[in-house]
Image (cartoon, rainbow, N blue to C red; front, side, top):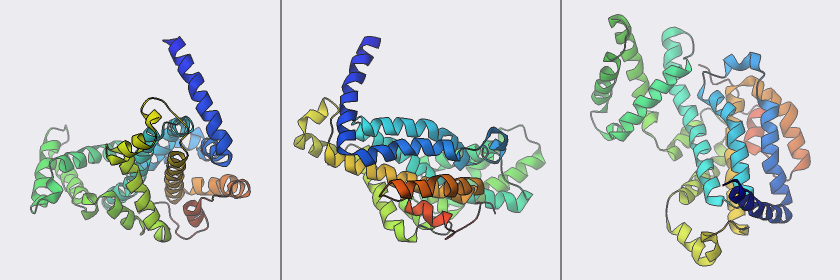
Length: 302
């Protein structure tokens, strides 16, 4: 097996060399995304501020994501890279809406922010509601309450605590925004992020990520144009450009959200990333610059 992997990696190395030769700046930007993670990740002593937020957990996971997506893009694994970018894009947008829906209610009730396990529980319930199509029902409020009651009844909470959590969870899960699709959530994110001028760009990026994630005529058309694509990884100029741009837009969005949520990341991005990036690359992180320059501020806290 190791011999096979070695042979396969040698072939992918040739693909990467060809891509680097044809797209040197884009290649360097992909590598710089990995370097940026080292600049913005918090020191261990400051982890407590991050580990209970959806964005914080995604930030820690970003090291694996960046290395893998970078490897995929540079190795000609374009469809795989599109799928992984879709995960980051969806998680980025959803985290803004979900965190606000949760934290605004939790803070109003308890005057502090919620732990990560509460967010996970809300996400599980939300996914169950979506799977059952409850958000499309006219009597969704009653159906949501019933599902939450069934869930909480199985817990070891006291009766008083069960009542308290029932009301809290229902108020969160009845948030109208949780029935939105991603394009509609992008519109809602304008309340928090300086994305007004980039709204259509983000919607188009989401459309592209979906186009390459699902089995559509897109895949078949590429095979018609380049039959070798079925068998082996190749340097495909058009696919690389579209894949890179979708990846770039996804990372710019995620950086923007991190800066909105964490003041320390915003400082590090301003001091260590943006200036260097603008001096060395022709393509700028415009969404990130917008929030670093103060178009919209805040930590994401109520």
